[in-house]
Figure (cartoon, rainbow, N blue to C red):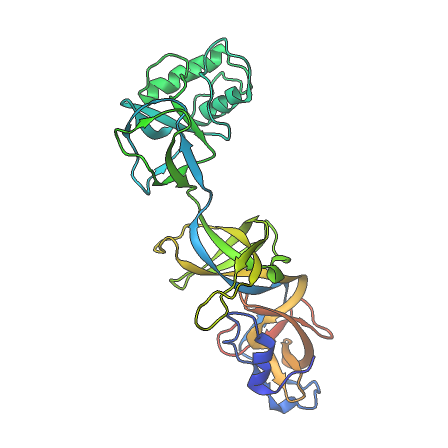
Amino acid sequence: MNRKRGAVVAGVALAGVAGAGAVALIDNRSSVDGRQAATDTPAATAPIVSTDVSRRQQVTGTLGRSGSFTVVAPGQGTLTWLPAVGSVVGRGKPAYEVDGKPVMLLFGERPPWRAFQSGMTDGVDVQQLEDNLKALGYGAGLTVDQHFSPATSRAIRRWQEDSGLPVTGAVPLGQIVFVPGAVRIAGSDLRAGASVGPGTTVERGTGEQRAITVQVSTNVLAAVHAGDPVVVDLPDGSRKTGTVTTVAAVTQQQSTGAADGRQQGTTEPSASVIVTMTGEIGGVIEDAQVQVGITVEAHRGVLAVPVPALRALATNEYEVLVADRTQTRHVPVKVGIFDQVLGVVEVTGDGLAAGQRVAVPGDAS
C-alpha cells in the first residue's frame, strides 16, 4: 500500500474514518534505514491487544421512539378521559375512559373480540389474558393455557378488585385493550365527549424505548444486518451504543441534486434502518439529528495498538516501538482497519504478540 510522507500519511490512512483524523503519527527520522535500534525503555507504553476492530460509515439519523401503535376501541360508549400526550401507559394501566369507566391496557398482539367468561371456548386470546394476569402478579394457582378455568376467574376477580373495576370474575368486551407493549401517547383525533364504537382509533402512540431511523443507501446496506452493533454520536457530544433491530425493504427516493433545489427526476434507492439505543438518553429532544456509525467492515481477533503508537517512517512505511524490560526495538508493521471507537489500529509485524507493550506519546497509555 503506497502512502505519502508525514502528516499526509495520517490523512490517507484515516480517510473516511470519522473521528480518527485528529490523531497525528510520529515521524521517526532516526530510523530511515528500517534497522531495529535499541533505545532506553520509554516512560509511556500501552499493550498490544488481540481484539475485534471495525471500520464504520457515518450516516445521519433521526432520534425518535421504537414502534408505532394505535389503540383501537373494542367496545362502544362516550369517551370521558384520555391520557396526556407524552405520558406512558404501561401494562395494567388505564388506556382511556368510556362512560366514566377505565379501559385497561394489557400486552398482546391479538385484539379483544369477545368477552372472557366461564364456558367460553378455548383460544389464544384466553392465553394472552392469562399471560397478563400472571405478569401483573395474579398467577397464583393459574395455569397459563388457552382454557378459561375457575383459576382464571379467580385471578380476574383479584385483578378487578385491585384495579377499581366491578368484581365479576369475567371481562366484558370493552373493559380491556391489547397493545404489543407500553405506549407513549403521541396524540388522538378524538376529544372527551366523542362517541366511540368497535374499531374506532382512540389514540396513537409509540414504544417507550428511544430509537433512531436512518435512511441507508444500497452501497452501505449490503453490510447492514439486524443485530449489528452501532455507535451513535448525539448532539450534546456524548456517544452511545445501539443495535440494528430492523432493516426495511429498499425503496426509491427522489434525488434533488441541482444547486437551485429543483427536482431532477432521478431516484436513488435506499432503505430505512431502525436502531435501538442502549441505556438512557437525557437532554436530547425528539426528532434530533444524530450521527450513526454503521459497521461496514470488521476484522475479528486481530492484533491492535493505540493509534498514537504508530510511527511514520521516511520510507513510506510504519513501525511501532516494542518496549522490552530494558530497551525498545523498532518493528516495521503493516496497518489494517482504524477503529475510531476503540481508538486502535490493526497491525501485523514480525514477532508481535498480544501482551507486548509499545511506546506511545503523552498520556495515550
